Image (tube, rainbow, N blue to C red; front, side):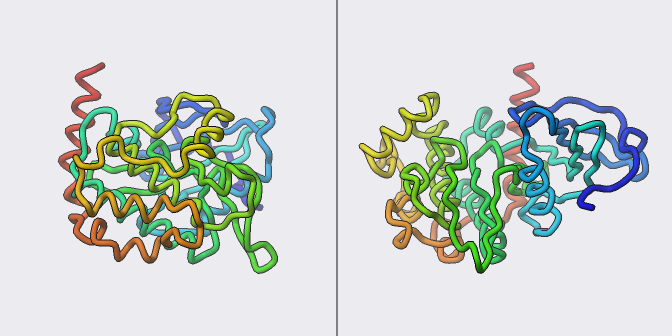
Length: 287
């Protein structure tokens, strides 16, 4: 069995909703046995949520443990709902951080490096995340940066070396996905490039447009570009160019990008702590 037996209601208490999406909701809770805070994603299997995708998410997290991937703790089946317990990241999402503070290029390089370490690990194990964006990158008050939300991931195998289903969030989707072509792990690199644009511009290209309109604009305009390229360093521009190659073969891999000077010149992850703490402070002040 993928899930644990038993009643999680007795194990976890003090639920506080953190967010809600098409799948269900995410809560912060207290693990009564360890006294630690955890995050619990509760997904209703009745609301058209495919059991295969749910099982996929659990297995992807459980079987791929890495310092740059949110740690899986446990899962349960409760009255037609799937409970997925994982480590609680106290800094929130990168999306939250970007809404509160501006990142300098060195900090962007650090975030990209941490994400690339997670992607290199996943890709070496033939896993494609398929939904890399600031909303699915989680941060800790200690500066840690981890990939989360494996709800759309795919496991490749010797029999299945490419995917073809149109998965992801439109503004972050690689051109080959938009075109309905077979694709591999480098779709995640494209999405990381879009996330780079998000860190610089504050939002992804064509955000807010309908799915079809995004696809139309991407087909017409090709890889998105910085609005004011001269305001940014040659290193950042080149890093984004390497991520946002229309031709998958010319797009760099996670392993190659980890050697890119934009990424190697970044600081240790702990240097992000002050930024994440101040972003939290700004959010508190808004409340």
